[in-house]
Length: 474
Image (cartoon, rainbow, N blue to C red; front, side, top):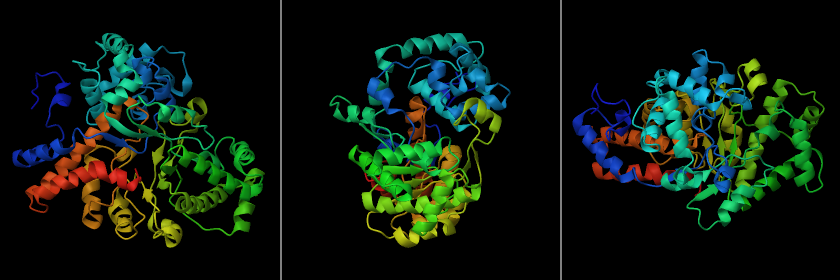
């Protein structure tokens, strides 16, 4: 246990962190955690750049690595009154990285109790070996200490990949990416794991995306097999999906606005498509077309075997001025409520029992875990429950997730943990967090005589290792 006089980083050094407070239950959790704490990391959904690993270039500085790309971190600092340009968001470089780091260190107390604070404290302790907390007083000294570490071979991306014990890491990629970095890593016999591309076609499906028409024209011209219009568009997406399969992809990911799916007649879909190309489509048209394309993506997944994941329910770029000034993924994506049962029915009516089809719905609305998603996964063999994602991948929310879904769907119908991160150095902390939470939840069931201890040891290995392999066909 930590004491009031102990350095704050000792919280991350405590081997019982996140385990139950009750001594008897904690002993059970310790035993369960020992089964999985050292298992390799399976990361089937995330946003790390494959080129970073292929090129193995040193990380530039602590702020660029740990602050600017992590909008869990930047959004809370911004909410305290720090302008985003001071955090080097949107590619702005007028502020030096050291100054951004000072803002972060002065803001460190804001992260008490947050998931991002927990992960960063864990990373500082177990990845970087720091012996003190960030603070305004020590900001420059910590920057220099971290900067020196980042210049050493031990902190190059490939070395950290091996140290993190990552077996599989999936990236998120544009359909027209040549996947050269992935090919280079796959051909490199010295690289210690698998880096898999993920097909992410949002920019080619959403009418409101910047340069949508230009993107679609290029897609059709490069991969449409000479077809034109909506038919060429569908053929091009099918061909690019196959290109990803040939380069090791196991899944296609969709950041849809809602969970709606819809089967349109070809003529109706073609008319909507042409309306969008002329720049005449409304927001309602965009929703209908996206629902149609979610149905089409499921159809294609049945054919080519890519696991279909769906991440709906986020109003992207909530603040227009911030988007215009700094671009997307800058901390102002805000969740909203989404219904799944009726929305997914058109797709599941036709493909929900199709052999080999795997569909993983994610949510940021906790209320649907027990009401909709777990019951769907408890019937349809194609449906696996997406792990807590984004604002929910936090210790208490993870515990609530397990309580919400297990009584309906058991342990076998979940996706396994996903870290969904651009912050490379937080990957081991996030996965370790999940493993501790699973141990805590199972320990309570054992203590309450709801699951035998022998069975709990089997279940936790399945949750951590077998579940992501099963759901993502690894």
